[in-house]
Length: 188
Image 1 (cartoon, rainbow, N blue to C red):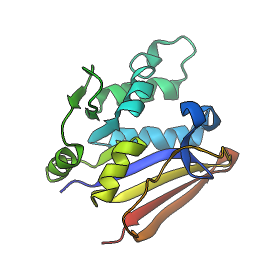
Image 2: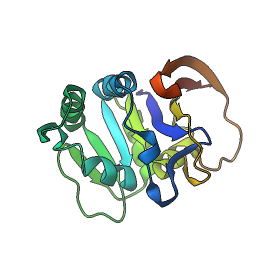
Image 3: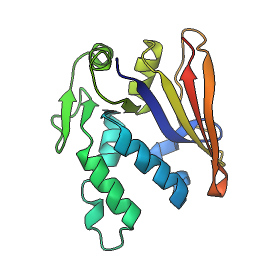
């Protein structure tokens, strides 16, 4: 069975984006934090995206390595991003390109099916999609890169739950700029 990891950058008050889907507070990341996310992308066997995250990432990363101002790390991330297979869950977009396939049906059933298969860990991103997987008990690990900024509202990292979920701290690291990355495993 594959491990499912939900990880994103978020504000100290728990949002992955501020009002209006603004993620300007999160960047640019330090070289060290960017390298951590690059290593995570390289290790992922499959990435699961909700529509908003797909639209954000696919508008930049497919050609980011071709930009004259791209850093070596950005070039590496763009290549890793393109190489990582992904599944995009949406009922409103018609197609996805690159190394992705679109699922328009029951996201929880498809995630459970993928999780039951073989392969490296799967990463999941996007609050709505991850919220559905969270409520279904499918997430094994959480990666929280908390940035020292308060935005007061927006899209929360965690959605409403039906009950408590116990977690065990696995790792904590501090990056330049005061970003604290914490990894938690779901207590089973």
